[in-house]
Amino acid sequence: MSDVLIRVPAVLRPFAGDASELRVAAGSLAQVLERVAVRHPQLVPRVLTPDGQLRPFVNLFVDRTNARALQGLATEVPAGAVVSILPAVAGG
Image (tube, rainbow, N blue to C red; front, side, top):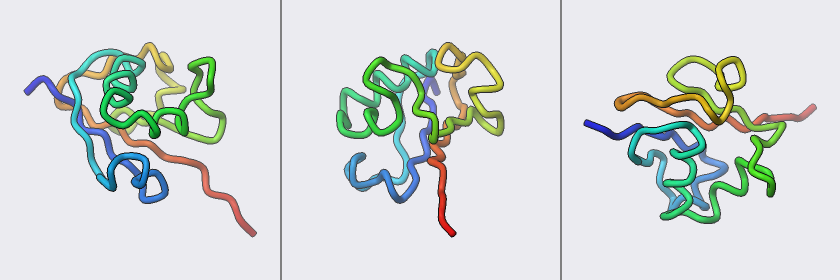
């Protein structure tokens, strides 16, 4: 299996064809997101800024580790890994 699993939170599912999970080929986190954008072009702009940086209030986890603690978008995502998109939740 050369794919990675991407878990999509409920708030972003309308931009992913209502899918809770997506599968794309492994690579760097940036490459994984590029592959997602091919099929779901409305999803990635909610994760990345227009200049291609991770939005401040969105976290991407590769398995159980926040990509910000690794190499950010340059983090290699091996086949079989799980990428979780976790937008920040605020409220009072």
